[in-house]
Length: 364
Image (cartoon, rainbow, N blue to C red; front, side, top):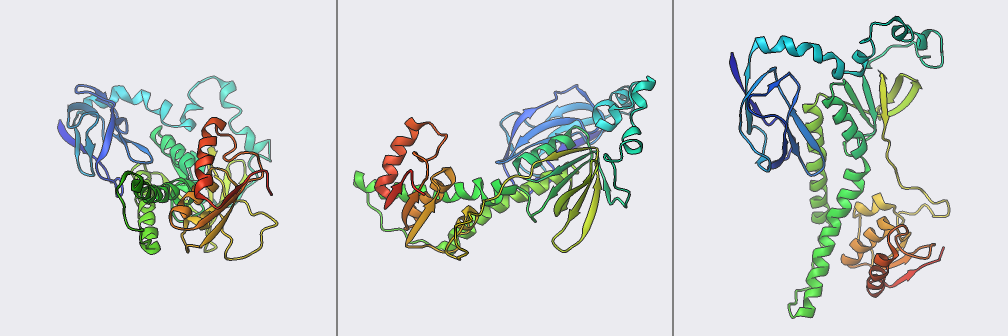
């Protein structure tokens, strides 16, 4: 017998990550790769697996503790005698492929080769294959990386395909995270201004766009770097490029440098995300930006027209207003943020009407 210390693996740039669940207790018998402890970062949860089969000897943490890379989670006493009884249970949940041949009846086995032989449309591709996996996930945003991590936790060999160099998709790179970071800065500016009504006055804020942009990028970098660490810890393979289905079990991934790889898979999750639509009547002009361009903080205009009074439009209006721009909002429907409760939108709209130059509803 020997004792193994199970520690927090490489989790990217994250520190003080909370322990949200402990899945075992002293005396429990575990198999290799069984989940032991669940950690949660700002944007993802992560199960720490058992490095080997054995018996949990002691716990080094409790729910609510905050840990960093290298912190002791528990000790595991390995015993060869414990491994054989657990073996029969491994193949069934470990992979979808292993689950198919489990029954011994002939009718279940016969259909397996049929798709390639009889139905040519299912597997038309006959070329070379660079990577084989059980699960391929197209898109590394919150839907994609969550699906990939879960598939890997369940024992499937997983490949995650992302067209951009950084993981995280729209949300982490050009959506929720950078917009909320800038909204936080806007909120601080607004609250400092409002304090003058209570007798506490501050000077006019000096806006350093370069430093503000750098801080926003650092927030994004911490989260996307953490995702790379989580993918590495789960042995999820990352392939960068644009995926195109060749047939029902093959995708071709084209990288920016022209390199192409073919991935053969059993199952696929499509989580391709979204991007800003280009309106046909908008001129091609550097002064016109979509939400992605607005989040880049390329400059601070004196006046800004926001076309679309939805949530994204109003977020950008709020940020640029706090930074000093005069805002006009145009919305073709009869209220801002259509889909939200009108009782909540009305007081918000009244407040914004006082801050912005103009809000035009039912207007194209």
